[in-house]
Every structure is written in C-alpha cells, then in structure tokens.
Picture (cartoon, rainbow, N blue to C red):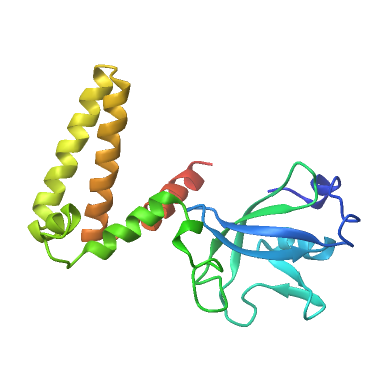
Amino acid sequence: MKTMAQFEQLDWDKQEGLLPAVVQNHLSGKVLMLGYMDKAALAKTLDTQTVTFYSRSKQRLWTKGETSGNTLKLVAIDADCDNDSLLVQVLPNGPTCHLERESCWPDGEAHPFIDNLAHLIASRKGQDPKSSYTAHLFDRGTKRIAQKVGEEGLETALAAATHDKPELIDEASDLIYHLLVLLEDQQLSLADIHANLLQRHQAKQ
C-alpha cells in the first residue's frame, strides 16, 4: 500500500487543496461514487485503510459510512496523469449511495457490460420459456444448464487446441454466458467468484 510520501507530486493547489476522488469497486470495476479529498483525508484513508473524504457541505473530514455503517475498505489509490484527481479502488461494505443503491449512478450503462449481462440473465428467470433462450434454459433446470456449461467448456478447449482463434472467441463467449446462467440458477453471482479469487490471491502473497 502506498504512503503519503508517494503522493508528493499531487497538485493540491490547482483546485484549492481538494482533489476529486472517483471510487471504484475493486472486484467488479463499477464506479460507485465521487468524493473529494484534501491532504488530511488522504492521509487518514491511507492510515486507517477506510476511505475518508473532505465533506464540502460539512466542512470537515467525513469517513464514508460513519453513520450508516456502509464503509469503503481501501484496496488501492492511484493518481491520474495530471496529478489532480484520484482513482480509489475499494471493497464496499453495503450500498455506497445514500439512496441505498450499490452505485450513485443507477443506470446500468454505467456498469461493466458483463454485469449488465448478468442482470439481464437474472431478469429472464421465471419468464415464459418461449420468450427467450435464457428463460428456456432456466425452465429446463440445473441439470441441463450444467450440461451446457460442460459442452461449451469442451468446445472452448478444442478451439484452443486447434489454434482457431475466431472459434475460440465464439466458444469462450458461449461458455461465459452459460456459466453466468448456471451461477444465477444456483443463486450465486460474479461477486462471489470475484471475492473468492481475491481471497486466493491474498492468501498467496
């Protein structure tokens, strides 16, 4: 984790001692909120590993979640190329938006496509099987969905073995789609996979 000494290049004077801080979910890549930091807020964030901003309305340091409990655990902070804004990657503890939403940008277009696809797949669950292929898969049940994942996995492996890159892209796309359907069928999500991968990574460090 970086220290204050590694942020000496930041241009605090450009915006009267405040820098915009874009907060991003470290696992999903979703943009969660925009806040502002002064030197004290940045120092406290680095020291406590919990994101703290400078509240322009309260005119004081404000740790996200100090009232709601929906804190932001720091993973990494990076400055942009002009050294006048920050990208703060976090693990959120609950919804970030004060409206109890995951993100302050509720429009699905503000989220990564793979997340949008997962949400679309979830919306097909329980619908008329004739309305879409996804609804048809859910209607067939877990065994059929799992079978499709196996089939697509084999086809992906065969495409790689024959060095057919266009076919590999197609088959890998099919595999990911069917895996998303299977996760939704089992009441799991990409967030569960992200968290598990992060836990494995941290255990090896």
